Length: 410
Image (cartoon, helix red, strand yellow):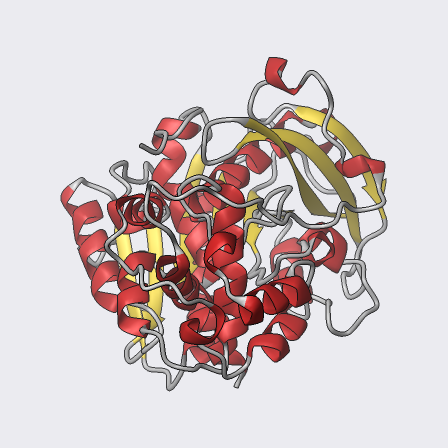
């Protein structure tokens, strides 16, 4: 049993969660099988990311360390600080995590705080936002990041958590939701930022939207003290098990992302998801190529491959432990509902995410009294929908910060 919660380019991004689940269920073993050693990422040569010995005595969101850093390239009149804080993994154990907080220069105390969850398709720790924001390597750069200047110019602070956690557990949405909430706690606990009483919003798209949606759902039980104004997320895969069933096992150009996410879930759930033990020689070679890789290398290494090429296992969706992991990381199966308004958008013909799971989840939220604004944007693909929905998402958050009454589409 899993623990309960405690306090083109469009294709490669969009299929990540779906393919992840497909590979995970295809190579997972029966409950009686012995788990093989999990391959974790190489540690960063930076003591800031190390974990203290007294972690158990700290509370979620406690700031363990902080450092002022330069504003990343592309940001205007901005200050930046990185916070190392205590969070919780999917098993309920204490972990450390990091968030990068950007603020306008001479920012007003009590200004709004936006937690923005970037799309991070990676197994290597150097791919996390706190690293990638500062790289000069074009393969690692977060090109969308300067778009956050819109929020900064409105006077908001923006927190960008490393939501895959200290082992880069790609695919673990519950972990991402908890790290997101604890990153907000940490930003408000850091006295120098003067954010203690600030209204808080959350946003993200695709995989970042999945972490945002999970954070919003978990907030009432995991972080009930947070003053959340609302969350805005788009193209969010809210049921990764259903995506796995739909995707199947055929060769796919983004199979590398699928393999990466299966390995990421194994890192987070080593007993329920012993993926490595079911890999054949080709699968082990692919694993070794991508175990510390970021998006481009992962895609190139796995392009056109399939489950059958990397595993001889016939085990599919019938494994109870695998089903439990998928449900544990699916917002549709998360019992708690948000305690703040939600704006959700998706493409009308998005073939990469189960839109019916979005509809079902939003209906459940509406029935529970959550103010929901749901919008369908008529886009030809998953990534274009991100751009088309963004202006409405920003306006939604601005209205929530201003205290404007919420309208709903319920």
